[in-house]
Amino acid sequence: MSGTVITVTSGKGGVGKTTATANIATALAADGAKVVCIDADIGLRNLDVVLGLENRIVYDIVHVVEGTAKLRQAMIRDKRLPHLFLIPAAQTRDKSAVAPSDMVRICDELREEFDYIMLDSPAGIERGFRNALAPSNKVLIVTNPEVSAVRDADRIIGLVESELKGPPSLIINRIKPEMVKRGDMLSIDDVLDVLAIDLIGIVPEDESILVGSNRGNPVALDEKSRAGQAFRNIARRIKGEQVPFIDLDKNDGFFARLGKLIRPGG
Amino acid sequence: MAVSLNIKGVKEGLLVTVGDGDWSEASRTLLEKLLEKQDFFRGARLVLQLGGRSLGAADLGKLRDNLGDLQINLWTVLSESALTENAAKALGLEVSLPRPQSALPPDLPPISPSEDGSQAILVDHTLRSGKSVRFPGHVIVLGDVNAGAEVVAGGNIIVWGRVRGTVQAGSEGDVTALICALDLAPTQLRIANAIATSPKRRGKPEPEIAKMKDGQIVAERWKPNEKG
Image (cartoon, rainbow over all chains, first blue to last red; front, side):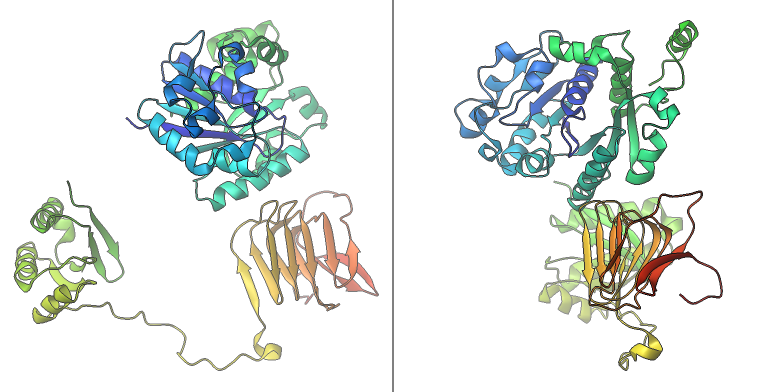
C-alpha cells in the first residue's frame, strides 16, 4: 500500500488551512480511510486544538526528527474515529527544527500504513512551507474570496508549479453568497479567473466552524452543517468521486433544506 | 525483477528503451509486446535504445531476426557501450539517428535591428504573483501577467493576455517603447521614467496600446491598420 500525501497550503494566514485539514481528514477517516494529519506549523501549532486532542500530546514531530521518540509514539489516535491520527507540531521550537528531507522520510514511512497523509502547512513561503511541500503528492490551496488571499494563492501556485508537484487544486473558503450577490465579494468565477486552476471545493461561511474549532469538534461530523457538507464533498472528490458543487444561491429556507435532502450539494 | 521497457512512436519510427536487467527476459518481453499488436507494428522500423548495456553481435542478431519474423525492421541501435555499438555496426545497423533537418540555413547572417527586428524573449506561460522577468530587449508574454508579477523590458512589452501586475517598458530610458496587451489593467505601468496607474475599468476589456505622448503615458484602443 502506498498512501497519498496531501499538502494543504495558502500563502496567506488565517484563510482556513488548519480548519480545512482537520475537516477533510475527519471526513476521509469517517468514510473508512486510514488518515494521519501532520501539523507542519512548528512553533504555532493549532491542529491539535481544532481536532480536540491538545491534552493528549506527549511527543511531537520534532521529537521524532531528533530521535527522542518513535514515529508511532508521536501518533495520537483521534477520540472519535479509530482510523484518524495526528502527529502534532512542537510548540516550543521553530521551523528550523525540521528539514524538508525529514518530512520526506517521515511521510515515506507513513505511506506504508495510511491511505492519506494530510500536511497542514504554515502560512508563508519559507522553511515551514518548504517542509510541507517536499513530500507532497497533491497540493490543496485554500483561499478566501478576497483580493489579498487570492494574490498570495497565486504566488503559492507559482511556487508549487515550479517544484513540478503537478497542478494544485483550489478550495474557496468562507464565501458569503449574499455579499457576492451585492458585488461586495469576489465571486467563484472572479477567483478562478485569476488563479486558473481546478476547483475542488467551495465552503460557505458558517458560524458552526468557529464553534466546532473552539470545542475541538470538526464540523465534518455535523450532518446539519453546510460547511461540514462542503468538507465531506471535498473528501469524496479527493477519493475520485464526481460530486456536484453547492448551489450558493439557495437560502436555507424550508425548500432549500428539502432540496438538500434530495440532492446534497456543496 | 522485471526489466523496464518503454515503447513509443517517434518521428524516426518506433523507439524502444530498455532498462537494466536480464537481456533474455527483456528481449522476450519486447517481442511479446510487439506480437500483441502485430498488425499495428508491422512494417515499422525500430530504434533500440540500450543505455550502457553491453551486447554482442549474437544477441543483437538474434533480436533482429526475431523482429524480422514480425516484419519489424531493426534499424538503429543507440548505446553508450562501445561493445554494443561495434556489434551493431558489424550487423550493418545504424548507431545514431540522423540529425534533424533544420528549416534554417546553418550560417545565418546577423540580423539588422532596423530591418529584421531586434532581440526579444518569449515567455510562454502566465506570470503569477512574485515572478519577475527582466530583459534588455523586448518581452513577449503568451499568457497573463498577474497582480504581484513584474515585467521590465529595455524595449517593448507585448502580452497576449491580461496585464494585472507591474510592467515597465523602455527601462533604459527609451521613450518610444510600447506596452500592448489584450487587456491592459496593470497595477502600475511605466515607460522610461514616466509612471501611470490604470483608470477604473469601464465596460468590456479590449486590446490596448500604451505609449508616451507629449511626456505623458496614454493608452489607446488598438485599431487595425494602425502602427503603434
